[in-house]
Length: 414
Image (cartoon, rainbow, N blue to C red; front, side):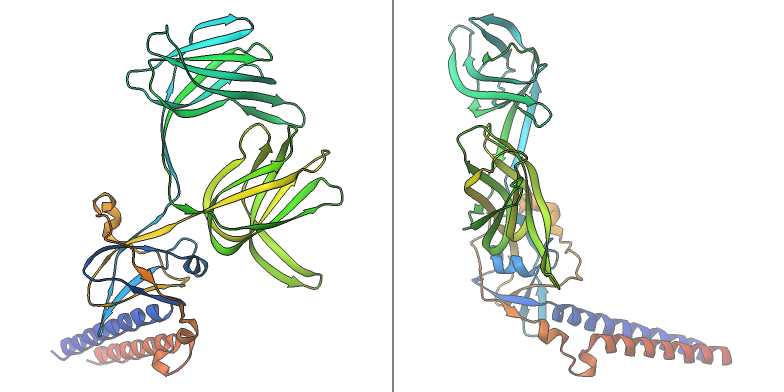
């Protein structure tokens, strides 16, 4: 009987200590956030939107895993579940390979005709030819009966393949059309052997973004083989798109790399800067120089243009896009609400609503975030013994070990 009493006492003690650990762990987790902002505008329970300002982007984790919305009423604290969306463009497309018929030539021009499937919409065609090193114009026309043709668009196709350049552009993009037949008229500097054509219906959810103000300074390497452009966005923010227009009237084709500054350190020789690549490829006079990439936070960018043996070319203008980050959150009423962030140890939250995204209603309206409050100094301040996380865990470990030791000793004695 005494043995059972000892076991019961040990079990009760361990349960109490476990609960105590959980309570202090939760308190420590909350206090370990570096920043918070008061949320205002909740007038009733329901769904709301919150747009994250650049200040939050700067100080939260790049994967947003440390964002928490806590609502407090007296001693009761509730975590409000949210759905996060980075509002970048979303592309979906239906692709169909079609065979050409009525291949013909007239007055030095080639004609290719395609029959589309019933109700097939098209806004892009990818062409492939056997030959390389060609330059021409393609006129796209549509018809319902192959008797009366209506011009859809006219675009350039080009291929340059040599020791210094490997470039092909044979993609036609135009406004969405719905015809039974499409005909391509090729006016090219050489006859082409048709290989394949992919007809696409692209649907683009455009996303929501801003166009940050930027400034730049250009520098030239001594050999003039590289043109380096330092770009300043003025604010730290997400970017996912870059475009550049060059101040050049002649045709050009230059490799480039776009990078973001991620760190710097001071050495005996001065400051050393570390960059991470965002995108790379070729800047040309043949197609618009627009580049999409996965969103990344940045403030300072570096564009490197590789001139080779060519004369440097100047940048006329540049544009970057900053996608909006939005939270859709379910809030309770009559509570003081905060957005907490700045915690490197937290895992991403797992909310049920992630499984039911399509059933979330449209938010009532957007809530406002107050100015940022710094909590880090307060969180790491070693005040009372019980508030210091390290000592808390040490004490708990010692108590459990001592309790276990004496309990086992008593059991053996009995």
